[in-house]
Image (tube, rainbow, N blue to C red; front, side, top):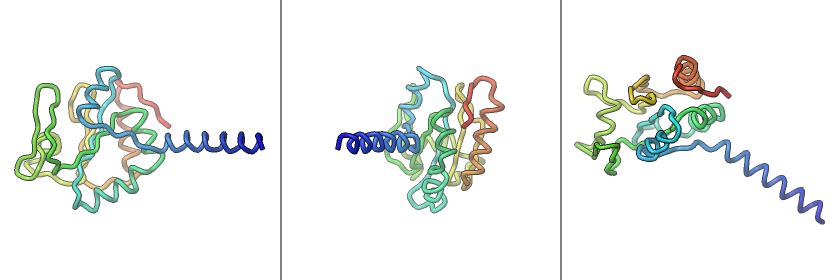
Amino acid sequence: MIKTLLFFFILSTGMLFSQKSNTLLSFSFEEAYKLQEKEKKPLVVFFHTKWCKYCFAMKKSTFMDKKVIDLLNQNFYFITFDAESTDTLKIKDKTFKIKSGVHQIVEVLASKNNTISYPSTIIISTNNTIEEQIDSFLSAEEITKILTSYIVSNKNHNGKLP
């Protein structure tokens, strides 16, 4: 009886740990900037909307991939943000709100030639410069290549490849 209980305890503990590593850590802008004070990591920002089918597909496939999860959790602070959110953001000394149906933070970070496309995935360096912006669906394989390339080429960040 004790052996059986011990077996189930070990099995459930192992399942708990394996589930944890399969969970993509996601932060708000405020949380990510606060975490950067302790440990500098670049940001990966994923702008999406509720009506965007490609955004939904990325959430359900790309960001569920184990390799993508490992790369993001180990090397970046991942932020997912609804571009039509009515939340007011205060980042450092600046305030961002919804304006004309689109959040101001999206206009600042994801606008190219006064146009915003969804989904939009952005890599922001530890010194707050936009390093990469992709305004389209990314498969797990595509985003893995982009993130790996960023980690390898960025000399200021000691990235970990899975």
